[in-house]
Length: 431
Length: 167
Image 1 (cartoon, rainbow over the protein chains, first blue to last red):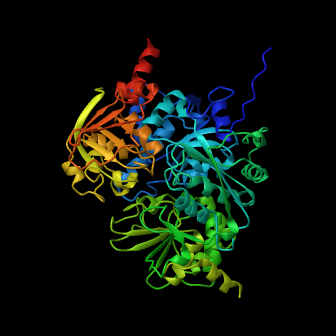
Image 2: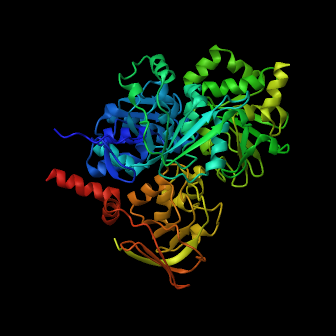
């Protein structure tokens, strides 16, 4: 009997090794992985893979392993978007797709909400914010439509084994600060070109976070340019899975980075010192503390998308908006991330707080974040948004300006009409 | 696929994102329609001026942002023959190769001016700027990925694979 040499690996390496039927994979190596689950949506999904699969004469490798979500062109605003949604429904039916959520919520929120994620899984998604799933100890990467055709036809994909960057946060976040501020800060500090690297988050600040907040860390790993984001599972993860009605996998807590594993680099930051962060146009890395902005007028305050419209995000906004009104000359638009989010916010009174303040509720979906639904901005207008990207022209006119901030900061701007420090408004609430 | 490509340079800076390449407002329409708006927010003359065979030169993180394949497809539609950049966003890089569009990492690349005559040798991993008599070596495309590129993209590559299976 030969002794196997013990070679420590990061969590990402371990999952890739398992998915490629190996004991060990080394960074830089190209391997072929079997995919455990596939996420698709209406924009990059059926309308772009249907004819290609037909051209290949191929069928979906395992329809039970596909989750399809209509969230981009919802609800339809014209005959073209209506046709895209109709095609998505027909294809889901034809291919007998295992899980089809039609206009129920944003795909990155639906996946964990419906209990599809288990630590150790290897997943691909037809969307660049697919790293969100990494908050549950999975390895999940975004791919394009031709690549998706290949995955659907074969059940596999090639992956270059990435190096892992470890990002530790210690200390407690100040009231009015959130995971979003952490990620905007990191975009400025680490830049947006951490290409081909996995961003692994940890430390006591992360351990204390809810799953919603951990999802923000992994979600915006896309803005760091990372291959994906990942967080080792713990009791918070397992409790989430139980609350969806699913049983956590037996080995869920074993999916961890080995203590001797080699990281590309390790960063340490202190959450106590972090002020709310705002990204100026036209890049998330263009971030400074909110205190460095001098009364920038905000015409549209937007709370939406996979990054910033979950139940916890609506709670943050409500904590600022309670008993206050949206400023004259400013509009506050809120598009909750899923129907369940809206339902929960209605039950716990959050929705009433938002609407009493003068918020305009928009349909659930990706909407204005991707410049696709209602909520576009005009030439010369400024928008402060809880979403993840402020690229030129993304939310409307190429001559509009998108600033990014946490739901606290967006709500603070909504009531003051200008970029404002949400900590000051929270203090007033307490007094 | 020809591994020697030469053409006129179009030069862009860092962080050319997918919203610039494929603006969300035109995502519902055809690729031809979308391509007409490609990069209009940074260079309104690009889509109408670029000629088949031209080469794009860019800085860091080309194609950062969305997974939308249309960002690469718009460039294929406009006839761009290759992209040489200091670095690429990973999904864009895969999308481009999958659509048969050669993309080369060239961190050393410098001093290219719009209109310079550029040639790219994919096999050797070399970029030559003939207008300035400069040569830069690039990261070679791994053999597994050259296979996809040589087939003309992932679809023809998969077709070969499915045809073999059917035999």
